[in-house]
Image (cartoon, rainbow, N blue to C red; front, side, top):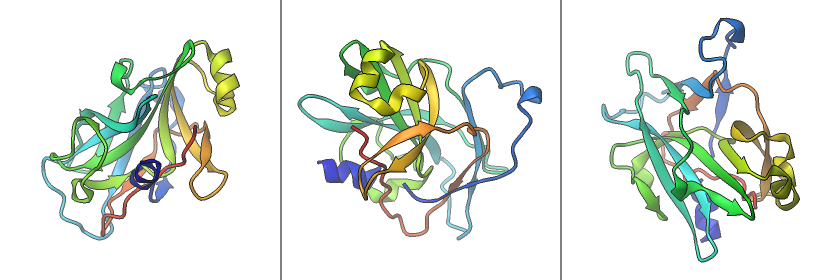
Length: 199
């Protein structure tokens, strides 16, 4: 199961010009902004969307949970995702009195599963934001830092993070400031994305 989750959950990412935060009306909000790039001219279904896929760790099992149907501006393939509410309770991982949720941004078809799932259909996802994650933290951060030292640099609430690998599959997350200029590249042959195993 661990191998499945790792294989499912990274590709390539590029960054482009940065906006001046002082003129950005969303500067005080947690908002993800970017574009989808289609270098191979892949056919894009008109009902495709962005979804957040969360890795959930439970005492009895580990699973994935898809939440949110975020629209895309198909005129220029741009997107803007305001994170205005706390994540669904189903995606929260609890460590003592602390809570953490780690989510990955995916570009998917309308057939992509909603809610809890474990084995994705390769044809249902079109692209993904590689080596980046949305991390939500709540509760006693001091306790969480003892269990997951890499969380020390994160604040309570939403954070944007970049992956750091310690070997081929394991790693951790660190703060990444630029969440306004993201580029998701459509993939031509549906390789299974993967992300570091962080716990």
